[in-house]
Image 1 (cartoon, rainbow, N blue to C red):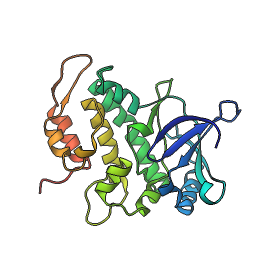
Image 2: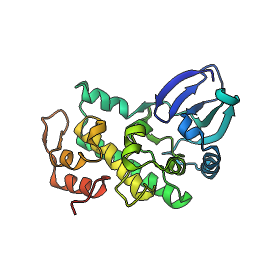
Image 3: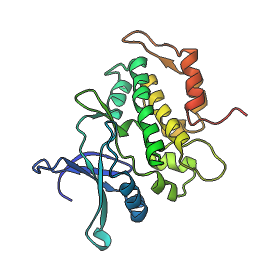
Length: 247
């Protein structure tokens, strides 16, 4: 598929045609997800008429080529802006400071939007992470890639494998992971937690190291020095993060 690559991650490669009059971006899926074309079409059909300022509009599922050259892509309205994974990487390098209040504002804006998704469409996102939250030039947060929960669930990967291969965090559960509103809240909380501590998690820090990381976590206000995380914020993370119980 021709076009300029705007972003790539474990889900696939996003391309757009700058010469086209259409403001469409196509996500060419990785082979693991492309194998589930039918449930993808069902989810896209369910969300195709969702009009919400916090969600990019999903258009269609498209198939290109045949045989070994066959690809499956999903078309979205293109959302220009910066994925939150970019300032997070810059913060890790010391290039920017992420204020704790700015990080918490992400939760304040995204949680109500997720409630709309859960209540009006009876679906969940399933793959929330900093790279799937876009800050537009107008300062608006937009949630992208919100069609994968049912497909990722069909992979039937255990929790640790989902994290290592797809960087998707899910709460502990008996048996294989299930995606529900709690898993969305946990993924959002983890994204906010990373913003607060100023870096992404390593592969080894989830799930087993998350509790220890929370216990020693610190926060920054403005450009001030690091300080101990407030008890109230720590308590919220304790409830919301996809973390193993002490019991």
